[in-house]
Length: 63
Image (tube, rainbow, N blue to C red; front, side):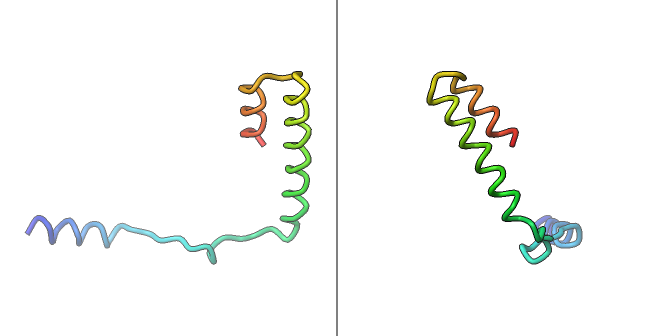
């Protein structure tokens, strides 16, 4: 009885999402390339010792 109640509540209140529900912007390639260039600049600064690893990590995550 408890098991049946659990299944009933779970199926009544659930939602599902699909990749097909997402709206992909037409200029996605532009945004990806722009962000990739920013990541490269940040990694270059790290490589030359201008920023620490934690700073590099945080800056990339913020993008």
